[in-house]
Image 1 (cartoon, rainbow, N blue to C red):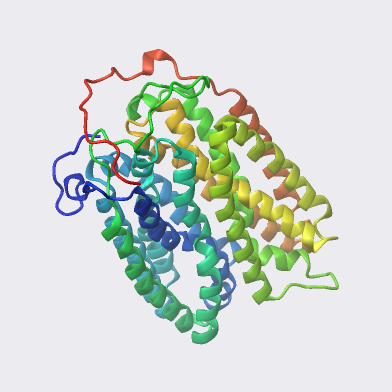
Image 2: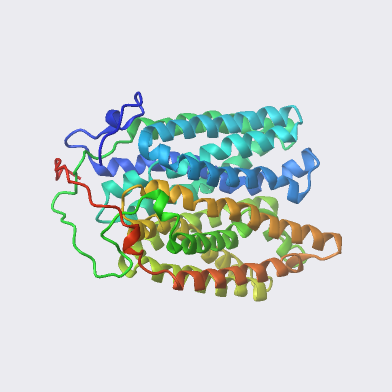
Length: 457
């Protein structure tokens, strides 16, 4: 990797690792960013208080989250090349400023009873922080761990999925302490914005990139016999012209739509499912359910992505999409009769959802090489933008319509679940159609610059 023009203390030339730097310090740096911005996955805990305090519908209370996901994808797509050029520390700094500013603007909006400011702050400004922060460590991790790309990206992206494991109970405690009116919601946003700013600063200070030509001590690249693992690089602008990119876009979009449809509505959904049973779910237990799903999301990101290093990315997505459809059908058909089965099925779906995110950077590396893989990843994340709108919209709109027509419990979600199963099946077919990238898209091999190898791990 060639060092580019200096961009202050955030440029590549200022963050090249010195001799003896351990590559195992880089995943914690990435985790500090991802655990913070992963707060977005706990948004469903905010929904009931916002709906009551600010008089918005279920669909309306999803709007900040939906816009945040849209901006996530757009900022990742348009900022991906800039992140590659200016380096991970610059990207992490931008993420910190935008994400935490979004929380602080939301605090002002809640205090002033101006819901539009929450939508703008959390959704628009905070969403930019999500996208830039999410892609900030990806190419850096792949370069530090060429021997284990699935594990490396899974380890960091695990933090994004596990953010709600911290944020969900923390948000519940803050709302209980400050109150669930608009003032209490404002104070909750304020505290979270300030604390996350400090937490994310650790990653900004800690991140480093490997020197040009670096490779792990004792590791030699081996030619792969797997058809989908290319030894050639493809530029970002050329990658988006390939059918492989768009097939993978469909795969990611539909897998995310299926998972996010449950995740964004998780707390109200589990309450609705068991409201008419002998064991109804309390608001506190629903928050716990969100945390459990976050744990599954997080575990799937490191577990399934690491497994993809062994069985291959295509096989891994066959499991995500095929078994995911079966899990959805199980939750839909017998979920209400068995609370453990409902929870287990939802955990499987969310583990596949998280695993899909964590595996896709390595899938892109296999198809398009390491050159500009971060920029390609950013463009692919527009699939998340589409899914971030589609998933919550499908589930909330159908549930709101069902409620107006007197439906209760699982009846509110039957049509939504059927749509999600169909999308997973379409995604399965798209994954089957992925083939190696044609040679005409390969980037000419530049002359190689030999650098220092084998610094300690």
